[in-house]
Amino acid sequence: MKYVLVTGGVVSGLGKGVTASSVGVVLKACGLRVTSIKIDPYLNTDAGTMSPFEHGEVFVLDDGGEVDLDLGNYERFLDVRLTKNNNITTGKIYQSVLEKERKGDYLGKTVQVVPHITDAIKNWIESVAVIPVDGKEGPADVCVIELGGTVGDIESMPFIEALRQLSFSVGPDNFCLIHVSLIPVLGVVGEQKTKPTQHSVRELRALGLTPHLLACRSAQPLLENTKEKLSQFCHVPIGNILNIHDVPNIWHVPLLLRNQNAHHSILKQLNLLSIAAPPNLQAWTKRAETYDNLKNSVRIAMVGKYVGLADSYLSVVKALLHACIACSLKPSIDWIAASDLEDESAKLTPKDHAAAWETLRNAECVLVPGGFGDRGVGGMILAAKYARENNIPYLGICLGMQISVIEFARSVGDFSSNTLANSNEFDSETPNPVVIFMPEGSRTHMGSTMRLGSRRTLFQTPDCVTSKLYRNAEYVDERHRHRYEVNPEAIGVLEEAGLKFVGKDETGKRMEILELPSHPFYVGVQFHPEFKSRPGRPSALFLGLILAATKQLEAYLNTHQNGC
Figure 1: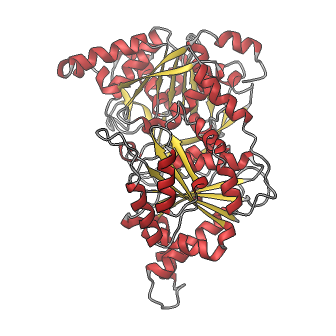
Figure 2: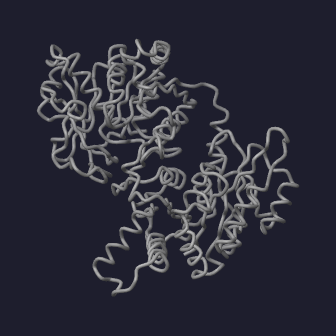
Figure 3: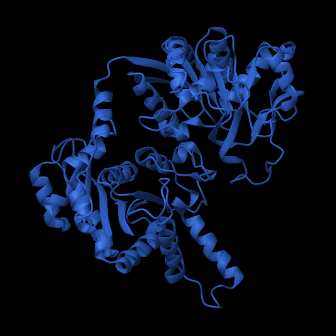
């Protein structure tokens, strides 16, 4: 197995994940099979219990793993299906070592960070690296490892030591280290400063790892004298100093690496030049250039709880991008804090309230994504009501589906005389619970206790918009992450009032997809279709939303009876 390790220095948030993904894209374009591992040094076992405001979205894998959003980048860029073990955390490592200690596997020895924790890290990496993730048999050729955080962080020290040992044990021909660093420009001087990178590389070398390539992040392309200085003081050949400057969209990053012959440097270090082909990135180039040249856009109202941080809905944003590109449009996402739509906001923050409603009214479609807790729920219900009553295309995902059920029950169904129709999540004492806690869920433990991962949804009729968008399929496998569901006892009343549940799980008791036949496009899904959207292969439901927003859905369904 060949390993490419991507580390980061100076500051966090430089784009190590995009860099690692782009390295994988270029190597894959050379005809190599690539897999990925993300190391997160935090003590959490996984990302499942972390706030989106703190760490961005929680990405869900087929096997139910709740992982860092960078694994979403890997899946989208490399078109692979990763497992929960492709995300290593300090919590997982310590948990596995302590379980072995309790069983007596260490035979009475003193359990220490070195060698026991470091050995566990190395063994984990080596065992996961050989698991095929591209649908083919046998291990990949190259494993790209991203080490989260910044070199010098206390929590990442055991991983740095384990990776140092790994580089020594596999040999120099099987290990390539790329260090991502920042080249700032001080406003007063206007000069590209290399000193932060010099110190970062010195710190890395003091820990026993020497970078083979430097990936330098900057606003503008690096000057030649900047590269010369970096080469001289960081002990890296000038040809191995890569510049990843700001670009119009992240699809340009693999092209930047290709244009600077990064693949040649990596392949040479890994002794793969003889078996690798020149990188074929024609489709990638066309995709990047197509996006740059798009002129028309579609306005999408994103009504959510975590709109203060775009990364909270990263996969949703990417799925919208994929769908818009397929329709030759640029997405224009208008972020609306759900709480700003509520009546209470009109009293406390009237300007925000008025702006939120104006934004909603100017949108061509409405999307309510997933979330947890009761904050902003009233605003989401108002957004769903506005979309339903004004024939605005609406897509509700997970919580967004439950919101549409609550709104419909309050406004249209036999519940209309009683506005207390609600979810047990928001009101445990509601007399009309149209959304309930799932029987198999845990009320005492939060981590990994939801309905997670890929689950099958069976279409109840072929004569529905969703089935047609999914290529007239009888079923679809999508990823889930929820602990509440539509109350089966409320289905009869809701369907009599006009709401149709066109997708159910294999038992027929769990509602998965709803539609409003009298509406141009009013769809709610309990699953998260955004997690399986790919560049060039958009999610069917996101594509349907954009087509409906641009009045193209009916024509599309008539001419594409065999699918997307």
